[in-house]
Image (cartoon, rainbow, N blue to C red):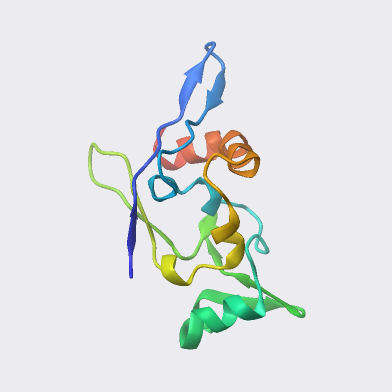
Length: 129
């Protein structure tokens, strides 16, 4: 199942700082899916079971721990579609089966705001900005 995730556009405040608005809905964002780390999204035993027979396609083991696979600076499950003259559209290919850590990241929480602030430039670059 694919879930539409509408793009967020970073904006400049005070002429210098890049900020991201807190999305109206978590499905209107993809910021927390971006990371340069190969061990960014930890997959627990329950998460692995939730992923079912596709678990090995989406996750991999590093030592004794499992993590979602990363591709191009973001989670492998995040699919980005770009149409000429429009902002990218984000899809989570495993939204219903996503790991608990993804489920626990609450919209507008301090963790969410931290992700937005930390990754504003990276997301702007993904948007072609």
